[in-house]
Image 1 (tube, rainbow, N blue to C red):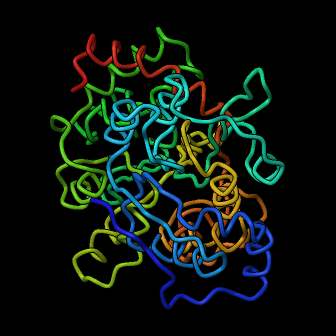
Image 2: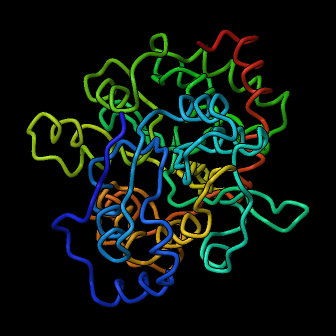
Length: 356
């Protein structure tokens, strides 16, 4: 479904407006007043991002919503006739897939290169451009039943496969992109053979067959169905910020661990953006991506959708994220592009060990 978002009632600071307006020349605004975005970000709070951008620049946003796989399939089907200018995806494996299939236009931007750490963007091409950039991150953490499980028994990813946790684990489908990315990162840390053994151990420790989404796993721990579960941080943060008494009860029952703080750090996945290969408005598309790493946009990711900003040094005002970590945590430094490259290998491992 396509919908056009114009400037709404969201206020933009005068400083931000001045910066964003400076990105565009009057000729660029006159030539192209619309950017077409294919987005896998289905977060209502993101509409403030688009309306702020439109208010500052006069450029309207046409947005087509789908999931990551649907967007990649659509781009391949449309080929050079695609009207897309910007691609927003929410998983490293899909970003990597779009890159290797030539769906993105490698770009050069000092703004993006200075703002986004090297491990959170594509490797530079031979021509010096970068195919995609991470724009926000989400940590993949462990939640546990505070009444039945000791935190020390689940403070590493490796312990998810330890026999001491047999019959306790709940997790969504192994083939879901969030898990493929975690498992791809573990392949980088442990090597393929050890990772396959680890996956088999997780299967042996499951309290039930994988089902549902991350929020369902958290609630299953709170209900006593499971002792431990794996989730992205923003799902837990939503429950922590909820006013519903049932959600508050869930949060009271579970604890959270950012695994491997004493070794390589917690796995983080990215939501990222790219310029579409056949964009007719590539210059303005680059400026839109640059806008998404501005302090205002990065704070929106943190406070509006409970994600971690990619830009370092920003002050977080999100009480749930602060409560989870005390303000910071150690994240792994595995390049996201390497995580994506491992996805086929991981899928084969999952099939061999019976991880549904």
